[in-house]
Image (cartoon, rainbow, N blue to C red):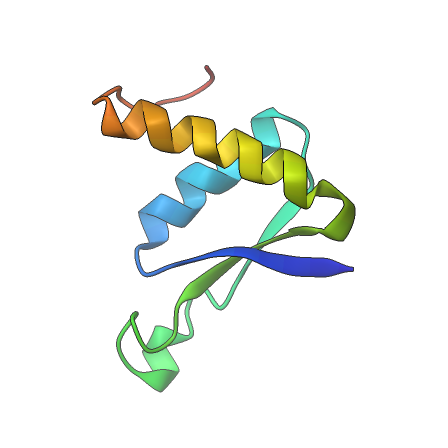
Length: 80
């Protein structure tokens, strides 16, 4: 079963996170990517990043590493 790991208001941010999880072979999906077109602003209809329940801990760790890299000003491009 897939669960929401994080919610984003920016489509670029969710796709960067998805690419990072894909690079670590963690199955994931994006949900509600275009919902804001029908339901209002992105803050009202966030884009959800979904992972399998059994992958939540590892996915959380991987995205925490990504957060650190981004706050240190490293560019997020391609493979790591």
